[in-house]
Image 1 (spheres, rainbow, N blue to C red):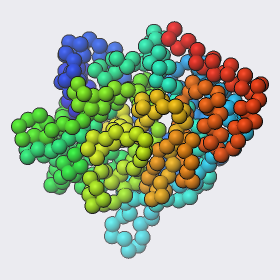
Image 2: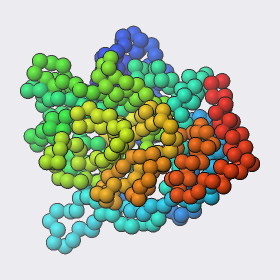
Image 3: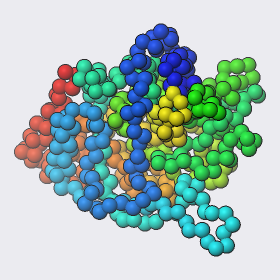
Image 4: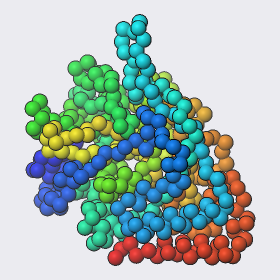
Length: 445
């Protein structure tokens, strides 16, 4: 809700009203320590760097521990050592993929209108082959233990039980709704890929008689201010939510970073009121790419944003109507005035919820579907153990996997034999020792 735009008082009041779950006095008391966190928040950079070339291949990572930022360095180093030892034990070569970047088209002498920039245009240029790193995630229990510790609190971590009700000044919010007769199109743009904005913004605003958001039934809310930029305003008022003849709220998706310096770990609340489920979400890939079509096309089914990069998981894909609950809003810094607001473009990210680390599979892979195109990707999410000839785009690995299970899944992923590693007492003893150090690391002290 744009009323949560962080003036010292309005943030606290509207945070209580938006969630409808806690009293105002509770919010005021507990939000004070982190109400200014928007000043320390750095918006996510595009991990895929889609609008520029990459440096030399020597800079490519094999293991990505970005999900451990803000956790103890010794813990992150142990996890990295354990995963590296497992990869070395099966002698796996890195998986690579073909990487493209966007280059703006040059305006021709006969062009009356300049070419569209990204993401309204996709002009993929082949760069080079890149390694697909293993992105390692801490398990939910490890994050909860750490986030609840005194040491983590002193660093600015937010414990799960405080995150949503008292979310402070850095968070993301999406509304999924059924428009009513009195609902008007809000001044809200579609979510854009990281490090970009929507050039065709004027196609979505009320001044152009647009009904985009009403047809879509979904908005990703961003900070908004009055004409002088001194006061936050609520763009969602146009929907008349909860009013007679107004919109009906189907689901609210709320995201708070567990730690403002960590762009992988999110506390999430998805649902409606008392029916909302709360969990630790793991950011995997940008939910949006270059525009796939000019406008909402419902001929192939219910409408979704033309900027969304579709992701399908046959095993687990919760939805509210046609909208994926794993496509979560990227946190934004909600400053009290427009002069203090530097970053207000809406973004979304595909995330893994608590269902995934609860499965026997510890490694999950995002592959490109048959209709996937460079910069306009379509994704398939599946266990690493599932056979597929589709190109690998992203690999997620949960830490604290027992050695035998880890070796078997990595061998299946890299298409190598696990027999030599599994039959070596020395190898398995070393892996077991590293596993126990990771499992027993004193995160809650």
